[in-house]
Image (cartoon, rainbow over all chains, first blue to last red; front, side, top):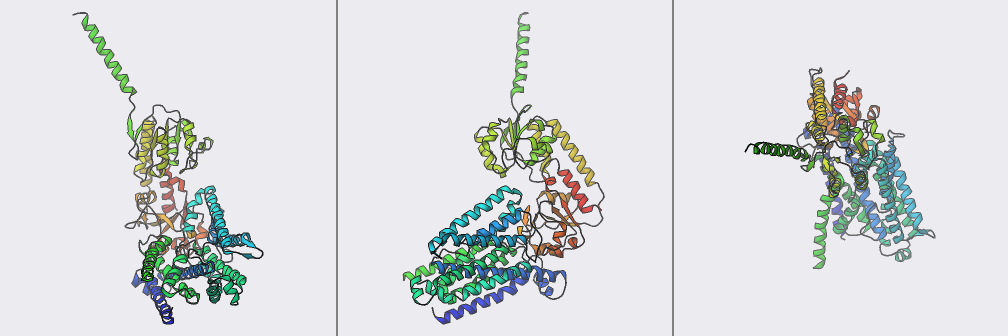
Length: 332
Length: 295
């Protein structure tokens, strides 16, 4: 892929985000555009809406979108499988079970600034990934296929666990389903700050392994002969992606589609090299999810539309359009 | 000729008498709230209810001792604890219901569509009755009374409820309108609230309370935007006892902590079972009055 095209990609995506953030800041149910502008300064109640509700929501959507997209790209590269997304290794279904358990126990309040649901979700997702990797590990290494299959099975187990918790706590059923569907409707600075450390660490871990992922995509032996420590790379990529995904899922639920589709869109437009694919996916993922969440809270204001519905409704046709263009172009 | 008159008179008398008893044997056909034809039952001995509101109505009509099966959510009055449970609201055990050989089964409305179809396929007598708006509650109680041979009890109950409603609505209210928001859930479960067309908003309207969620295009149950809630800054908050939060919890919850009502302690818990569309709705109305206008 020509370097100039990639640079153009950075510029365009960067600009899109820079335009979207202020636009999103001015749109909302609580204040109209004029009101939002005047509320940017000062201590009024309107200002509190902007600074404590709207801004953290925007920040959280950006962070979650970029993390989900880069983790999706990494998973697709690591497993050389276009159907991978950040949720495949049981991380998200584990988080769902953790959240369900916390809600069933009726835990509330914050200790050390963390909500119980977040803590349980994260804990169970780490348990889940541990289970996945232990089961598939033989002689200190895990094969691709066994990891994926193990992930499938553990995800199914976790999901069954969630359904059991719902069955035993029917009064909490709707709460659990709602959380699992993913939403930014109650976003505040607490959620954003909670997921930030691992999101940054995990994303950095992935970005630092772009070269290795490129080489791994050509085959493990080829990569090893090129000086890549395959085991270490796999482990670090998995840990980074799991930690980052777990941290965002623990605060916002399971938002599908972003991690799966955004990397493919970037690949179609800018090529498969991870050196450009991953950062561009972060920008595009953040932009896309922020755009969807802005719509989720504005389209039917003051009612909220679940953001997962919008990501699928808007994302899928766009992706199909791009795919069609590429398929037709390849044919010529 | 003289002999014929008594014979004719006797024949006429016999015809009239048989016509009367034939009329008594014809079951009155009614339509339930889903438009389905239902047969009323004379002196029913085995009743099953699959919906909490219908259960409460049946007990209030004095038919409690005839109930042989209930769904798991029917937990009022306390007598229900002793009755056999036949499963939950969405997936009751059809076999268990059939095995109880009920004279009539009272279900909820389209929410139990599948259940109704299954029971109907077994040729069981099913009546789908559930009020979806406040004004339908009286009709639903009367219909149950008509179907279960307790019509006069039903009329009395409805009259009592109307009298109680008049009493509550005649109670003092402040000059200025009070605005209110109902918290069904908050935080990670979303900000679910009642909207236009819900029982809660209807009852607020009756009491002269301004529901901040009465927006155009709103639906009875909504995931409400947190910003919009903070911007509306309602005078009073009503919170469902099942939300999992306490009034103190709200003081540290993002968005809710900015509400004047939370800061000044005007958050009142309400028992959501009182909002079932049955005889206890007037207790709910009274509870709402006490919460919003009370001291």
